[in-house]
Length: 230
Image (cartoon, rainbow, N blue to C red):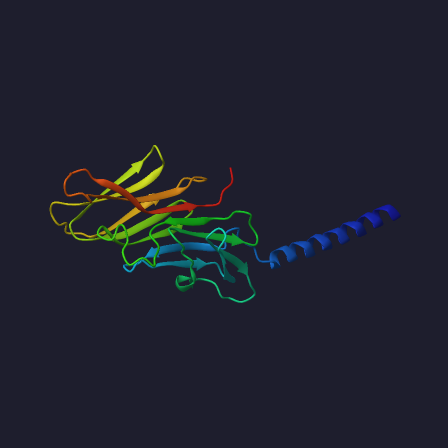
């Protein structure tokens, strides 16, 4: 008769232990592998860049400027304070020479998403594309969808092309023969998983009055990497 009593006692203890373990699992908050939900990279009419982050709850950002790699390393950290939802980093981004990069580093993921930009230094009074592109922004909607919004100068024709050979969305800008009614453009771009999203503004300009040959300048160039490893 002792064996059934012992087995019954063991089952009760085991049940209580599992119940407590499940309660602890429920009490612990679930941590997302990507602590920010969306972002928007912008270049305004003055050429200055800014970055808006839509953060998850209880997330703060610490910005480390890595001068060796010319990278803004944004560390996203879970805190006990409800400080998330949005953080504007406009005044705290490093831009050097013609390269600009932001790494998003989270404490609970080995993925490092990033944004890279190739453009004239924001300290330059005159940019290579000034007479074509006035401003632009790239907004992450979700992991596979991004919105590109931009304004061009008057009398500039715009042509959208997806270059399959180099997997790049190209925005071709050229002086038109007649002024267009709309100077503001929006496009929704699709990004395939584990692939880069690349956007090139291609400025077709004639710097030599003696020839009709156009010179193509690719600036700015934006590259979005979700940090996935092969």
